[in-house]
Image (cartoon, one colour):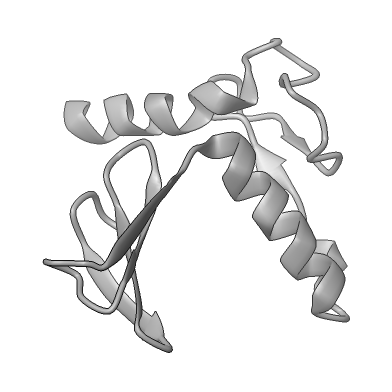
Length: 101
């Protein structure tokens, strides 16, 4: 998903990526009745819950560090096991890389 892109995902829910947060909006992408900004820790926690609820998807539950490109499966870790980068900085680094390109 590109920065600023908006998608309707169903049931009156719209999602947008601002470069750091995944933003959920209710009932309208432009004038929502409610808005929730999910930072990296919450995104990971939500993904882990969805993986538990969706059988057969466990093998897809990995995260890749944007700094050292280490891939690890234990998404409960708060830092990359290789370089120590805090997980909540992953989206910020992705945003910086997108702007450089």
